[in-house]
Image (cartoon, rainbow, N blue to C red):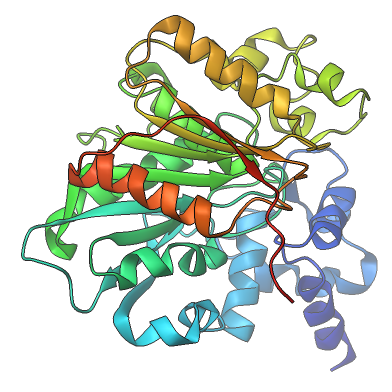
Amino acid sequence: MRTLALSVLFFALHLPAQPARNGMFQRWDKNRDGSLTRDELPERIRGNFGRVDANEDGKITLGEHQAFLRKRAGNRPQQNRMPAQLRGAIQAHLDLPYANDDNPRHRLDLYVPKEPKGNDPLPVLVYIHGGGWKNGDKNGGGRRVAEFVASGKYAGASIGYRLTGEAKWPAQLHDCKAGIRWLKANAGKYNIDPERIAVWGTSAGGHLVSMLGVTNGREDMEGALGDHLAQNSRVACVLDWFGPSNLFTIHEQRGRVQKQSPESLLIGGYAKDVPEMGRSASPITHVTARCPPFLIAHGDRDGTVPFAQSVEFVEAMRKAGVDPAPVLLQFEGAGHGKGIGGPDLTRIMTTFLDLHLRGQEAELKSAKLPSFQPKR
């Protein structure tokens, strides 16, 4: 009985959405191969190894221990994480596998309005979470897209992806692209429009949605994950909230060098030391005139992802002749995610989506906005 309790405690301490838990898995992964052998586990819990090694291949992956946790504890209903006043207006389809495997990171949540406006297939707003590519999960995406879905004018989705404790770049991009392809392949089933997909992300999620946008049509960046390779992963427009764009300049812009920066964990070192990976993972290096419309929001006092990252990115798109030109919203005095929000941002975001997904004429320009301070 004591051994079983220790096993439950061990796996409960490693839920990847939390830094300390992810870090423990990585510390026990002595050879840094993204899996745990029986010998790498503390002796007290080795007896339970077989209960977690689901495919009996002699190792425990991050996905397997997540699956073990889910099986034991079950998932808290994710729809409950949405605003209570909007739940009745939304139908949630949770944990849909988009890659035809048992990795819990290869899941997405799809939200559709119970009373859609009109009979035509709905455009989709897809949210991709942040967390430095090493933390976070898709579960909060429902709250992000809820207001748009409840309006009846949009469907919404939230895509999960593998974190750096499990896989290195470009796995994260390949996961997101596989999620987009799944949505397109299943568009008829859920009455969504495969040609009207917007992607929205914050921080690391902002980086990933930017990568989706700038690699539209790039077969060499597509990956081969899932069953829907006949589909493309093109997106109609991108909403990037304070995401990194250039891994070669981000450290000097921060004014400090981190030995274990999130970017280094993503690509396996500093960009200058692994330049091929640095270029592959930097949205700015993939900019062409064919980029879709971008709406970027960033605080000019961001010490984690400096505001200069978005300035660089916008300038590169303008030089490339991207049309329409990207829109940059500078939140004065705002930090990393703090101070980014408010009615003005919601209004601009709604206008941007209505313009590029629903064909409603509007004019949007780059602007400076005050840091948003929500009322307590």
